[in-house]
Amino acid sequence: MTASDRKEALFYKKLAGKNKLVKCELCPRLCVIVNGKTGFCRVRMNSDGVLRSLVYGLPVTIAMDPVEKKPLFHFAPGSRCLSLATVGCNLCCKFCQNASISQEYGAINGEQMEPREVVALAKSEGADGIAYTYTEPTVFYEYALDIMKLAKKAGLYNVWVSNGYTNPLPIKKMARYLDAVNVDLKGNDEFYKKVCGGIGIAPVFEALKAYKKNGVWVEVTNLIIPGYNDSDKAIANLVEWIGKNLGTIVPLHFSAFYPQYKLTNAPATPAATLERAVAIARKKGMKWVYAGNVYGNRHESTWCWKCDTLVIKRAGFDVLSLDFKCPKCGERVELKGMKWTRSGGA
Image (cartoon, rainbow, N blue to C red; front, side, top):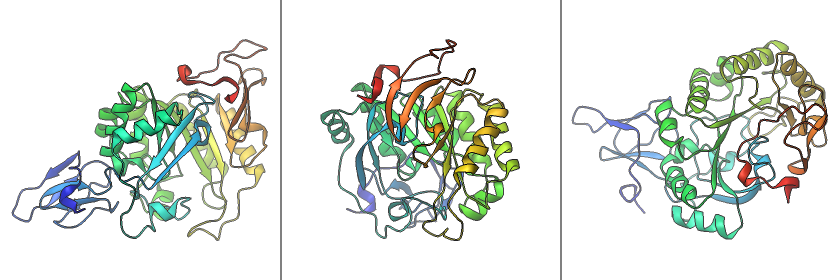
């Protein structure tokens, strides 16, 4: 299948002149792309002056996951979602967990599957929703959007797991179909430029504010890497921004790093570092704070922010018990997507 056969992209501009340049306006990189070439993400091509998605209808990974794996802890607890991705990404993080499909995939590949077929598969597998994840869903925006529209009609939820490199206008367009998002807020401005191959942190801030403004449930993940973004100051700055701009009820997930891909010179994150991060966030007023990627720690469960009573018990990604309010003091837990919740993970 040639580039001309693939879906025309949304959010681009044809530039004046005879050289058929186009400017992609989907993500903050704003790539200006010459005819026959792709932008930074390598999956959006200028084909004779028309920007086209090379990955539309070509999922490279499809699996069933608990929504907690995203991680989303306050959206439809205990539910299960069909998770999919195409190849490609608009960052190039040295610590990427899915580098084989985001960075090192070679030629574009995947199994042909139309949006209606994805939704039909989700229904046949008994999924409660669909997650756009593993790689960056922004780069397969058109495909995701068409699936999301059909999923909504079919009574399924839609959730994104994103690096936050999506411009506000595309977020606004898809927000009516998107129920929840987890955005990986990685570090400071320098971290994005040196470790992620990005243009800075400001676009992620703008994306997070756009999701909130447009009514999408937001959770945030911060992967803590020793020697890179694990100082008290770095953690405190991140927490303060979230509390000020998104509110203290936003669930915050601190995640442990393990050496991988091109970042093998940093050690695994000690459990004590996650405990310290949780303590800092709690002290700064965040209500729902978690520690992940370290199985069996106390902070994979939900504890009442007022009286420290267990409210939602988890073991890994399994929900073992669920209360909608604190059994001791009665404080309500902020939960969304309750019509898809499976109490106790059943």
